[in-house]
Length: 393
Image (tube, rainbow, N blue to C red):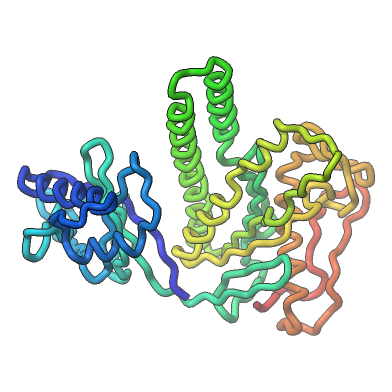
């Protein structure tokens, strides 16, 4: 299968002539999108504009889309810059070669795909889409999706990184490798950012600020950028942790609780809490899942998405139903008091192992029934697979 990602690069050290050519091409694209067919615009850029942009907003600037066969990125490692890119423009045969500064290195084993040139505050940025092939398979059944190489073996060297996605704590992670366990929390700042900008939007509406809709849109853009930046950094830390485990001799697998389909529809006549609905329905759960998916696959780390139903309401130690109150999970059966997010992450790890047993009719030891060992009341044991030390994917 092929996996793509985008590398953001700043266009640097533009000469006056190159800056003029890029601005002229960019302005010509905006005029062409608004109906001026007589502008001087590179023919391939016209074709891309017709293909991509169907509805045009009058106050919006649209990026210049460059076909994969026309853009070229080379590593030259000059005094000015390490990477250079060729951008096709009208009136310049062979296009314009510009120096770029990407946020990470571009390796030679990737393919450059369709990319975009963006102008922001008078500066140009090139979003380069790259693609490479990975030898992974996609296995799916109801409530379970797994990306992994064929013939994957789960053994005592397997390190499972269970991830619970929530509103108060966007990412709660439990790493289980060998007999050890580590817990992490990521993105706690997101909740404060969302609450701050929600308060600003409400205050603007109450005060009836002139051009309030424009101000609210601008605030929304700032909120999205800040939240996205935090989530990018958090998911990168998780993938880097998995890479570190691999360097230490473990075989990491990232397991994410999938919230898809868990948002209950409104029941007619039943009262709703607007504040709670807003928090739940604006959770960036899809962004977190997609960021983890492409980043882990790019690094060759298997990733699974499992159904998250009732993982927050059950004890990860004895599997009994418990009580969740103010971020603490309490089990009346075994007396466990635990962080509710970490309890859910542990249950996600156990559910992944259960799915793996259920998906598989063969293991490298005699087949045993799909079951979990339940520790006695008051013990600190974890649910483990009953029978066999190795599970084969």
